[in-house]
Image (cartoon, rainbow, N blue to C red; front, side, top):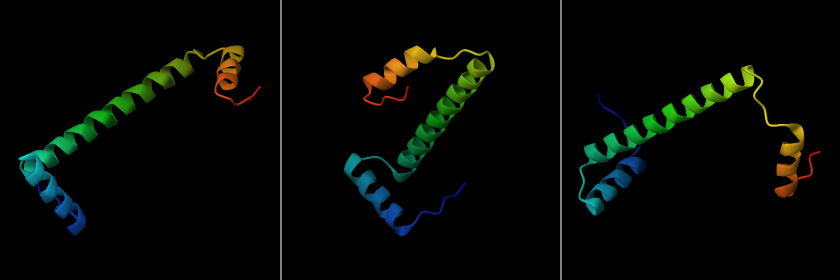
Length: 76
């Protein structure tokens, strides 16, 4: 697999590799892995929330209004 980077991203990658003693390949692999993990987590959380919503599992209105009030937003 090959990846095309902008000149700016390439330079940042080179500088980071030099300052950390890692290879560009290692850094790129780590960045991709972090991205994939974060996206998988987000999708799992969305799917859980959708299941909860489908089951009617919502925060009671008075509890949500109390949270808004605590946050300084009187929505209710």
